[in-house]
Image 1 (spheres, rainbow, N blue to C red):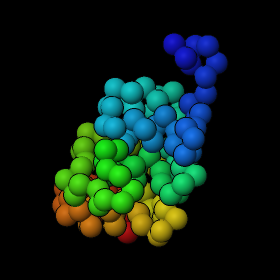
Image 2: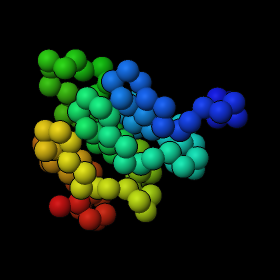
Image 3: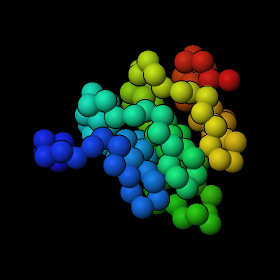
Length: 122
């Protein structure tokens, strides 16, 4: 509905996240798929951390900045949907130098690590 009234796919929140980043982080697969089919920018980084939607899919929105994010927070369906996009940058580095692959390794998410490597992550 918002799109029909002129809203853009890459509107940002106060901390610079796009709707695609939020859909990835909150694991809203239906919304994510809608945004992907509506040409949302896959590789737009947020203004605070420099993370892309792919990277945000590994971060728990309920964790505070001070606490370590839960290591088990991930969703393979979200990851697969993002990786299915031909223009996804699987090796994007956030402001702190981390990547989606380094986050998967840090959190011991072996299946996510394998998927990322299969799509060219190094």
